[in-house]
Length: 595
Image (cartoon, rainbow, N blue to C red):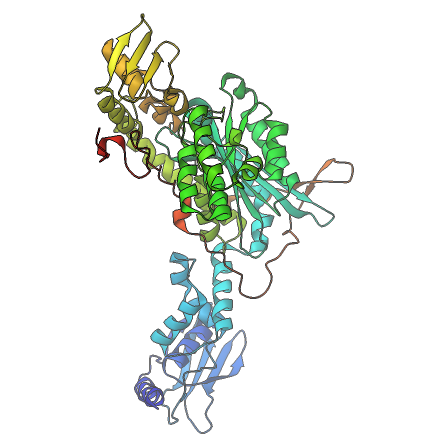
């Protein structure tokens, strides 16, 4: 009753307001129709169109006996229309509920266009509430959803247009960023989209010349109209930030598509890999990934993402004590320390042995893994891909790739400016680790054997350091690429600058070189020329084709959501173990056990 009373009051106020006047002009008949529809909704009365053609537009109130009527006609010699006659008074009560016949899908689309332009993630549920609050009109969920779809198509084009424009988009990338790789492939008799691969020259240059020889591989499932999978190979810059090297979109995640992606990645690196150290690749080591890496990067070290391994261990055993010992084993620097922790776990559960056969320590444990990870053990690219897929699931494929390019461009600009502000030898994250190592080094006794070899004595153990080969018997220097506390003690004792002995990939100079190139924006699509795409015929010959969407489509209904907790992306904290009492949770310095 309160809602009905409010509607009547609103109707009385609206019907007393008449925004139309004789002589008022409209750009065309469509503008006239839209304006009258907006007025009908605002004044809470139903509009009935009596006549609408190229030269005139006549409408009246739909209530029988109400005199409201307007006659609009085309002005002679010009395209505009003007109001010729107007009976602006209503004698009816107007619309008595919140539903309105004029609140069509097109009207909904126009009403929320600005909001969706600013926020493509605006939900139909939010559209419903806004229209009710702003206009006093109730529309159905389906009207709101279709209105948003129509607005998205008007602003960004349709999903189908996105696939059709891919060849032109790839050509624009190659033109504006010479040396970049951008290709699209379709398949089948209907030329359906299959694969898209993009890597900017700035990213290729930065990885080859300045990044550490480490790549992360991962994927994210797309939730748009035609689904698909987003693949990515990302490096890590000097300051431990992600540096996407290559991005691909495929119709489905298959072993064949992973093989193709790694093939394109190999072509991208080309002869440049001859001057690089052996690559280390981290992934979840799914079957398709493993075969693709072995085929195209046979000399690379391919290890597990540590988060993937640890989550499997945790979910398998569900034992807090076991998990704590597991983390001690993970960060053990020597094989002897690792095997000692394994023995402790086996004493608690005999099932640990078979689990280690499923996840061989050679593929993830610090003590065994042969590749250089520089302290980078988990996939950071997972969260990045998840965010891209979430932010872009409602826009066509070209707009998604442009969103990714814009984010890359933003990173390049901001990190380039940041690099120029650094005055140190190493980047801040490495400087912090070096400061900690130097502070700890002052607690050690240094015995010099010769010009390059040193014996570092502490209360726990004695370590041997060779500053020429950059080796410490604790293995931390070799594993992390930064001088450990023992190496720092040796270097300080002979007057050397400890920072100079860090790996070049941690220097400010490398950081600047990583972002020294620019990613040039792609012109607006109105300036593109239509370019046919690439497909394959039965014999494997390439042909020029018009690319259509893939056969896969999003099923009807609300999609099932899988909770993806952000904390899962964070690197787990190292479990500290006391060197005196050997209990977990505190260090030797804070141990309460009497000496």
